[in-house]
Figure 1 (cartoon, one colour):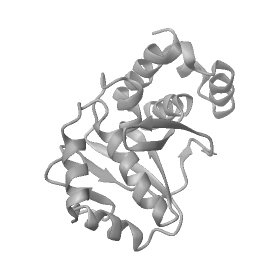
Figure 2 (figure 1 turned 30 degrees about the vertical axis):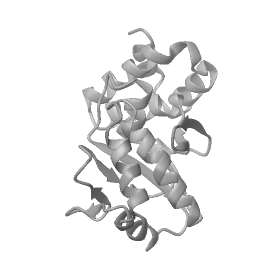
Figure 3 (figure 1 turned 180 degrees about the horizontal axis):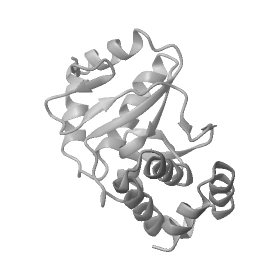
Length: 189
């Protein structure tokens, strides 16, 4: 690992917990873009970002778009990340969370998600699944996997972001996917 990478990672590891995964994702975005691969933050790291760390995750889920077969290993090993016992998880001794690369594309319910938010960070921009789609992701998980914590995360994201949510999009998504009753429960919290 180069001294520049070591210094960058050290700097990121000292950031507050609420932004650390997103800033690391922005740094990874830059490195993957050099390889012509796009990165999108999904899952718990997106929930953590949208709840200002009222919910804290133990992994950074990043979906890559492009030919990634050897690129993941190349980029992550250059940074000193080691693959864990599972194929798509990487860990680094200075971070309290792992980095996971779920398979592409970004899907929520039966929808492939193409629109994302671009968040500006000290390390540059990073693509993050939009708040409306993250709420629906957690609603789907709550209903389909009988996962009460996912419902609580949806409620938390709603309460912290309701003034900026595209309600027409969210309601349409929930209606077409069959989750309007659960969305109404989330919005009444």
